[in-house]
Amino acid sequence: MKKIILSAITLLGIAFSAQSQEISKHALGLRLGDNNGFGGEISYQLGLSQKNRLEFDLGWRDDRHVDAIKGVALYQWVWNIEGGFNWYAGVGGGIATWDYDYDGPGDFDKSGTYVFAAGDIGIEYRFKEFPLTLSLDARPEIGSGYYDDDNFGFDVGLGARFRF
Image 1 (cartoon, rainbow, N blue to C red):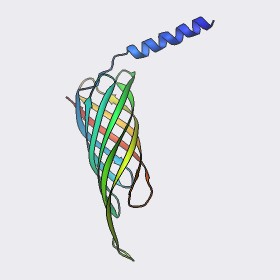
Image 2 (image 1 turned 180 degrees about the horizontal axis):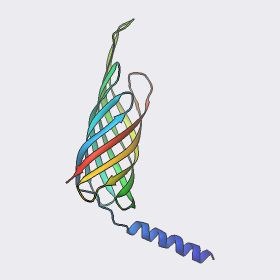
Image 3 (image 1 turned 90 degrees about the horizontal axis):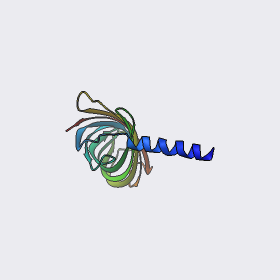
Image 4 (image 1 turned 30 degrees about the vertical axis):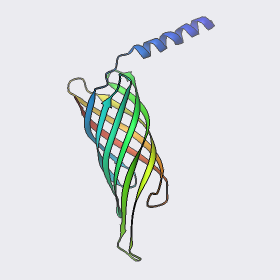
């Protein structure tokens, strides 16, 4: 019985690893997210192999009193779920600059720069009929020097990228 179970697990493993997935050499688009303010990022993905890629994002965040510009670089592993659906996970980091301006009682104005480490996990769908990929991901970030002394951020984003 143990041999049958072991054989079944082995066959499933081979079947999942044999599924073809296509990571495009290049993908460019937008990622809209929310982490201490809504913002957008220009997002570029560079395919390294059929299972790995780099992602570079440059964007801004806009909150009631805070504006920030942020750059992120991530290394991602990609796995095919079925058909055009993939899930991915990655690690990386970034740098950001922020400006906090409060025009109320006590007039508070401060700015700074911070660095952070980031993780990334998400799901994407690749359309076969045209070169568009839609994604939804979560990016926890931990760093130092942020304006509210909370060194942890949880960024959730929706992306649309054209493959070429």
